[in-house]
Image (tube, rainbow, N blue to C red; front, top):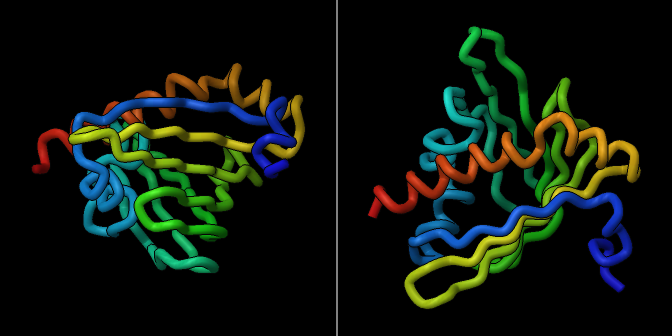
Length: 153
């Protein structure tokens, strides 16, 4: 049983199909020059501070809210399978801390099937994050990603 299977009650999931080839969606997730264009909900500006895309490598982004306040998002890459899977720790202080992201990609012709799992430490914390707007927040991020990959070709 995988870690993900064992933690279903602590996991929130979003699935999307991007109308872009897998190679382009993968580049958007893994190459520093693309990340700032879509990372973060609509209306936020993102600056990539650190991006070391390898197992054990750190990533750190500064996100500026529309009201001018900023917060840091950061993590460490735990697993990378090229064009298939990224697993990373993640902290989005002060809103979300100590979660693990499982990002899955699957080529489907000229489109990319995408699954995004966020594993939380406890079931209660998972429910709290859902109530705080997990689906709206990440949905907005993936709307931006969709726009970016479909207009960047």
